[in-house]
Length: 460
Image 1 (cartoon, rainbow, N blue to C red):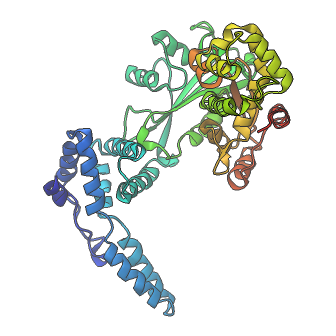
Image 2 (image 1 turned 90 degrees about the horizontal axis):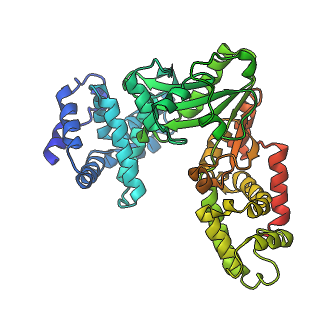
Image 3 (image 1 turned 180 degrees about the vertical axis):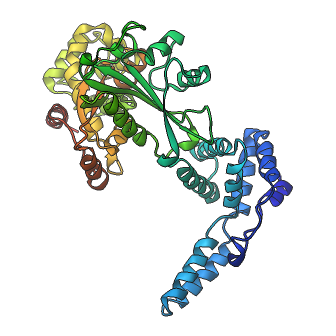
């Protein structure tokens, strides 16, 4: 391991010879990739630790240049800029050169994408606390962001005539609404449906991010009407029935490209593509799941259980009004602790078996979900990752849809509720700027009314 690294990670050329040094042989990159791919998970961690720690930045040289930079502040601008440029060059880790050379080898870019996926897994596991792994991850992310800039990506429409390998990967990578069989994927690329992917010349045959679109008469409020109920596979599209484009699934396929902005650009490119195909089309919206809502709700109920023990005799937890809680209690199993029973029914999805309980919970869950999307924040931005993605893109939090996803996954993740993020094209740039700069969320009257109800009825 040490011998290989010493051989393939070349010393940094001096500042004066940085553009004159010959590149290392491609065999060094091939040897590195071959060696790494045959390590088990534990030895990969050790290998990456050694690479990041022993072949990073020369801290001693950086310190000396920093002192020199301070000393030159009263000199002429040319001298200051020269020292700054030297410092910038000195801050480059040695392993960055190796990463650049690997990217030029056959299969090198895909190897580095997978390598970063390993780094992210190591960081997430918290088994490694040192800063060097994080620095290596940051360096690699920066390089990938350059290599996968939007100008270097190709937009590809996936159809039933696309290569079988691509169709199979589209099916395997679908992360939102799993593809059941070949007929299912045929329908998702058939009439009144569109499927687009970004690809990159350095990773042929690999879709990087995939967007599924339904062409509908109205903005959809139920996912089963999209993924389960299809037009005839041989039907001809009637342009008069296409008034809205619904983005119902977007999936990133490469874990190593996490944090490299692709989905936002894909949606924008697809909008332009659809406008070219259907000039009259003006309604663009997602129909999105709300992952994390059920877990958040369970946490609230868990916290409320202890606080509500002395309240159960007179009402219930603070999440519900007294009247709502009486209606819920009447629909629950007699004799069971009320809050705990409600938690259990929601966790198991059994609440849907009682229409009485469904009716009692609808206003409660809708306003809680509205607050979760609108009011729950992390560092000032939406806590929910899907909401954060669409709001950054400039979408409006437009409509919550009750019982929009009846699948076990939809019920478990968000009590069956889904949300439309509406893309008003004339407003997206402004909405995005307000969200990113001021943490301001553009929301419809329906959503704001539900948020107001939450603030009025939930004594949190």
